[in-house]
Image 1 (cartoon, one colour):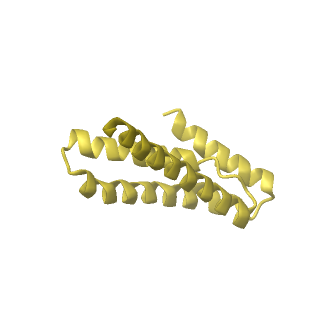
Image 2 (tube, rainbow, N blue to C red):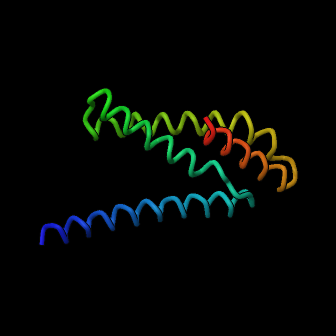
Length: 109
């Protein structure tokens, strides 16, 4: 029975994560009319920061969570200021290319 409850909790956490990613993509597309390809990269970056801070530095999970959120926010702000602000006044295809390029650049590092 405890294994079933663990699977149930895992299902709810993973479903909530997918819902947050979907809501974020929908919100960005609805407001800006541009698909944001860096959304997943920023989410993955925050997960890696969380992993590093908890496992390598030995910080408590709940203390490491704000560190990962702030690191993800700083990277998102840097991407926004360097590539998105410049291309937001351009037609949709150029802005989508900027999103795609910044996402691909982080994946290949």
